[in-house]
Image (cartoon, rainbow, N blue to C red; front, side, top):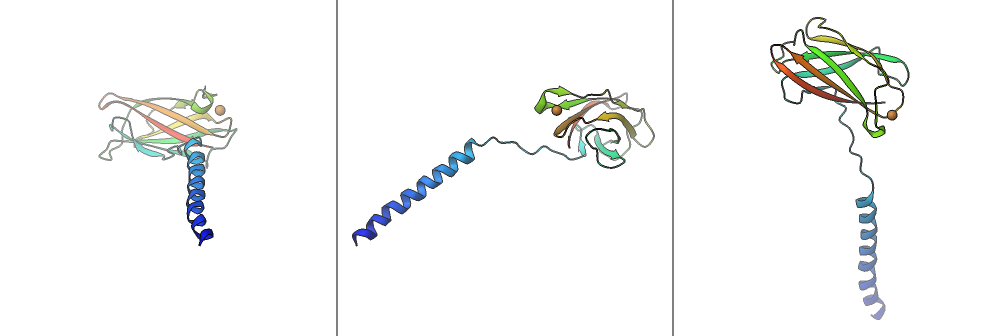
Length: 147
Ligand SMILES: [Cu+2]
């Protein structure tokens, strides 16, 4: 009887200590939310829908890569004659892009080619597009590319 009542106290106390330890580990662990790696999204102000697709397979660390950018209005119509600039880098490493990629003029049907992108190391790369049009205004879109 005496032994049994001792266990009634010790077991919950041990359980609480264990819970506390797990909570400490969990709450103090550095948190990295997984980056959004979707390649088709509405631009910041919802003026356009932008999608990017690598040409010639998934990008690799090292070689130059080119991407096809497709711009549409929310109603699905292609965005013609947009002027697009691209900037980016690795926020986690505080550096920009190692090259100066170019974005072509309208290739038709809202397609634009991004050329000269180079990923020099594995990690999370951010690509920020600034899109300007005479007819529909300007907007921006940010993509994450993880290598
Ligand atoms: Cu880096």
